[in-house]
Length: 594
Image 1: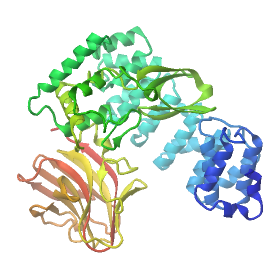
Image 2: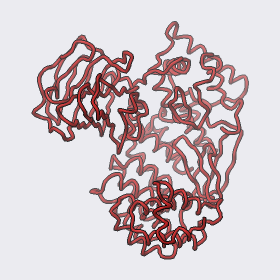
Image 3: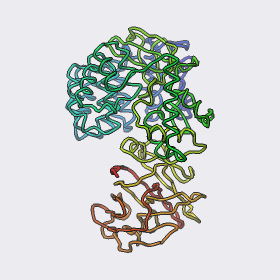
Image 4: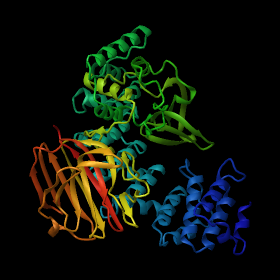
C-alpha cells in the first residue's frame, strides 16, 4: 500500500483501527528493507503531512512511535519538509507522550528549538525526574556537546546518577574520570557498576580506574571478571601489571585449567556435609551471572539458559566456569567494537542493519550507528570471562556452587548488592502471586480485587531479609478494607505465608500481627497518623529481636520480641472481604550489616 493512499477522504481513521496499526505501517514503510527508505524525503514529507491533517492525539502518537522505531540507530536525519509546522502543533498536544516524542524526533531532525527545550528540562531541578531522564537520553543519542559540560554537576542528584553515568560514556570528556572517582565512595552498588563500565570503556579513563584501584580509592573487589577482561584488552602495561597484582593472572594452559578446577573442587568439598547455602549462593549468582544467564525462569538471555543443564554434576559446573572458552557456540561468541570516539564495546551481536549494530552487553543492549564503527571483530571466545571465581572468598564459592546444583529455586539473600532487585518498578521480577490480582503500572505494585475475596491473597517476594529498614508508600481503597506488609515471613504453601505483618486498614493501621501464628502482637493503633484514601508512608525497622514501625513519621510499633523469626521474606496482602484495591510505590530497602 502506498502511503499517499492513506490520505484519501475519511479512510485514515478506518484503517488505523488499533493502537499499533499506524506504528507498524509507518515503521514498515520507513525500514531500509522495505520499498521506501527513510532517507527518501518524499516518504517523510508524506507522513508529516498526514500528521498535520488529522486532529487526533492517539493517531499522532502512533505515527510518532512508528517514525521513532524506523529511525532507531540514526543520530541524525535531514529535516522533512513541513516538520517545523508539525513540531509546533505537536508541542501543544494534550498528550505528554506526543510532546516528548516530538521533541526526540525534532532533535534527530536537527531542530534547535527541541535541543534547547531538552537542555532546559535536564537542568531544571523542578522538572519530573522521568522527564529529565528522557531528555538526557535523547541529547546523548544526538551527541549534544553542550549538555556534556553539565553532567559532572548532575552526579549530585541521586535520582539522576545512573542516567548521568550512562550519558558520560556517550558524551565523554577528559574531566569525567576525576568527577566520577571523587564521588565513587558515596555511590550505591548499582551506581558503582555503571560507573565502572563507563570508566572501563576508554583507555584514558581505564588508566584512571586502575590507578584508583591501586590507591585503594576503588576496592579491588568491585572489579568484576568481565571488567577485568575489558581492561586487559587495551594491552597497556600499567593496566596489566596492576590487574596482576590486585586480581591475579589468568593462566590459559590445559594444565593450569585442570589445576584450577581441582582447586575449586577442594574448596567446595571442604564445606563438609553442608558445603553452602542456596539463598546466599543466589545472591552471589545475581552479582556474577544473573544478567547473562537464565536459571529457574529468572535472569538474562545473553548466554545459554542454565535451567536444563547438567548442574547436578560438580565437574560439569567447574569445567564451564573455569574454562568457558573450551567450546563456544557461534551464537555466543564475543563481538568487540571500537568506535570512532575511542570506546571499546564487547557483547553478543544481536542485530545488524544497514544503519546500525545492536550488541547485547552485560549493561544492556547498545545500538551503535554503522558510521561510528572504527573496527569490529568477532572472536571464538565466550562472553563469559575467565577468572570468574577469583574475586570470591571460599565460602562464596561454596554458596554459589551449592545454588547452581540445587534442584529448585531458593529465595535470594538480601545484601547491599542485591537490594536493588527487590522491586524494579517495571514488573514483578523476584515476586510471586496471582497475576489476575497483582500487576505493576507506572512504577506501582497494584493489588486489585473488584469482586472481593473469599480468602487472603499474597504477593510474595523472593528476597530473604534479616536485619533491614524498608520504606514505601501505600494507598488503600476503601480504607474500610484491609491489607498488610508481611516481613520476616515464611511461605507455607497454597500461596499463604506465616510471620510478622505490619497492618493496614481502618482499625488496624500501625498494629503488628503474626499471620498463621500468635495473632495480634501490638494492639496500639496508629490511626491518628493515617490519611485515609491517600498515600501513606510506612517504615519498618527490624534489627535483631527489635521491631519498630512508623506511619507518616509517627512511631507505631516498638517491640522487643524474643520469639519472632530473625529472617524471612516480604509479602503484600489482599485481605479477604469486599471489593478493594491497594497500591504500593517508592520502595526503599536498606540492608543492615549483621
